[in-house]
Amino acid sequence: MVIFGTKGEERSSVRYGYLKLNYKGTKFNLNVYETIYQDSLKYYSIWFTDKTTNDETYGVGRYINFELNDDPEHIYSVDFNTAFNPYCAYSSTYSCAIPTKEDHIAVAIKAGEKKFHD
Image 1: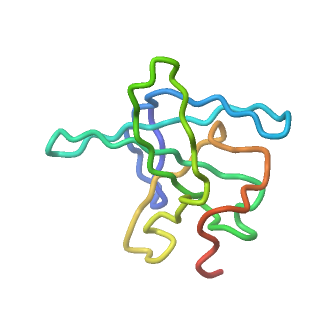
Image 2: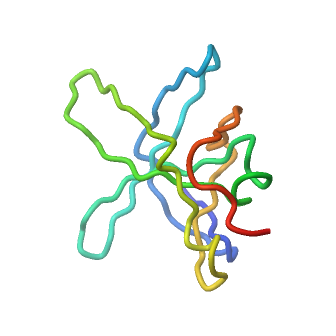
């Protein structure tokens, strides 16, 4: 799939899968993306926006590092306290992946890193 970076460039990305979440009766999916580095190491992450985006949190969105496990039931825990701003929140030198419309969570995620500056 093609996504865009904050400098407008197209990026190739792999949507590895998704997580099904239920928060107070609201159900939503959360995409997991796979990145393969030059040394062939695979890295998994979640990119998201929510109802705090651009007010309390960085306007582009936030990320969570994700680790696969060997659970045969495929049950995972997502700790939103670990949500962080991408590098582009701190310097325009960096370009960061922009979460897609599908990566929006229709609730306010109050946990995790907040907006660095306006």
